[in-house]
Image 1 (tube, rainbow, N blue to C red):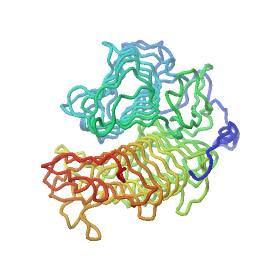
Image 2: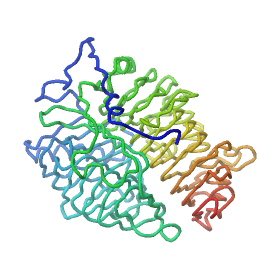
Image 3: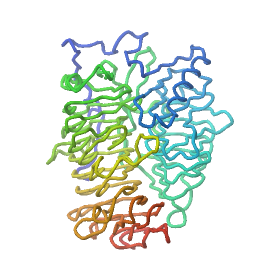
Image 4: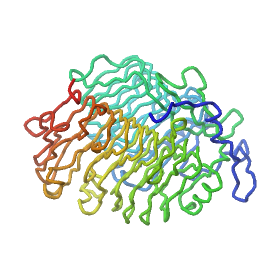
Amino acid sequence: MRAPLILSVLAVMNVFVQAPIADDGTSPDPRGGSLDQAPDFGPNVRIFDPAMDMAQVQAEIDAIADAQDLRDNEFGPHRYALLFKPGTYDVNIYCGYYTQAAGLGRLPGQVQIHGAVESREVRTTSLSNFWRSAENMAVTPTGGTNFWVVSQAAPLRRLHIKGDLSLFKAGYTSGGFLADCRVDGSVTSGTQQQWLSRNTRWRQWNGGAWNMFFMGVDNPPAGTWPDKPYTTIAETPVIREKPFLYVDDAGAYEVFVPALRRNATGISWEQGEDPGISVPIGRFHIARPGIDDDATLNAALASGRNLLFTPGIYELGASLLVSRAGTVVLGIGYPSLVPLAGTPALTLADEGGIIVAGLTFDAGPVTSEALLLVGPPGSSADHGADPTFLMDLYCRVGTSRAGSASSCVTINSHEVVADHVWLWRADHGPSATRSRPGWTVNTSPNGLVVNGDDVTFYGLFNEHFQQHQTLWNGNRGRTYFYQSEMPYDAPDQASWSHDGIDGYASYKVADGVTVHEAWGLGIYNYFVDAPVWSENAIEVPAVPGVKMHHQRTRYLNGAGGGIRHVINGAGPAAEEANRDAIVVEYPAP
């Protein structure tokens, strides 16, 4: 790392000492309104109370879930946050597209769900069960098993499941992410192709297909590559759990920002209230679709406010500029930011301690340099004591509208930490035929470009971009778990080649990098339109400081072609006749 990573209590707290400024220039009520009345989160946030009639609560949940489970709503405009005040609920919570279910307790056990918190299997395959989440609750599942049947962008965080957890029912699944959770029983992965579990506890883990990753987990399964598809890392080097909205004992709304942990094992909240700070909702500008735009949001940021985005779609004529160290930008209910004028949707200054969590970025009609820009080019500040964190972020090029971006995320700052990111150039569109959006319509060379040093990713999902999915130029980078599919729609080999080389490596570490390390990489191909080839899935400098662990390629299906080598000419081809290829260590020991 660039510097010793030392964080004092004062370093955490001084992020928030700046007094916020109200819209009228006066100091606001730090509670953000009267104690017995919630802030105005808008119509897409549903707040439930245990005193409500449970039949009515269930009816409201079912109405939203039945609509959001429809395939037509995969790229639909509706988004919801279902929030549960402390207490006990006899309900089944179902999360469809763009639905977040969250408890409003300070600890998970303060919201008790007797029934289920589930993502349902509503089709024969769940490979598109995206964009849904659950967090900060205790669940006692009816029948003993809670089902979370998902693929990408569907995290479980800060849950206590008082029973078993199944990540599938019958059809194919392609997740996934589980963090800071306790499962009293067993976890069964079933058809899940890959999965990352971080800082979680269970009685037992069952199953594994291609790439199962365990980090800071108290009881990981036995075995490792190549016999078992298990990668185990004992400690999480540096982590901050995702901030969350809660109601305090006086009935006031606050956002809890968990403290930084180093070399972390296990669950953050198991010994009671975990360390961190509570930020009154009055220090947040609550963004609402149709009311807020780039002008009002930038004014709030300039005044020292944090941002809390409520569910909806926000079309932006200019980039949102975060210039203050320690700013929190938090989304609930899958809000989407869409840049219309070719700017990034969100630009972060080269400052420390910024947190961006729970947002979706959709490419607009004019090509953006990046949808999320972390630090300007040439950023040089040392943030080792107070890193910027990116959490549960999803970037998309081509969904309900055509879009273009040079990259989804570009990181120029040093010591940035990302915890669960899915970058996706869409492999299908909103039409009834689920047609592919088009090679020349939704253009984007790279999902991720890293120029900063000492950048760390936990759970990088990066798919279908037209050149390198990941281009890493900075030194001392680390990736823990990588899932990637190459573009489905390359029309021919000539269109997908460079410098006399067939295709593009998905994971590319630039030639000048001297230190880099990655663990648990799964890279797959499904070339639908032509039998094209990629020479390598991974390309890295052949120097002593670059080490790659547990990598595999797989031919899924398609018109032929494949991936000739796993990494730097090593490893066999993944093709129709030999679908799976593995290199356990590079360089070989």
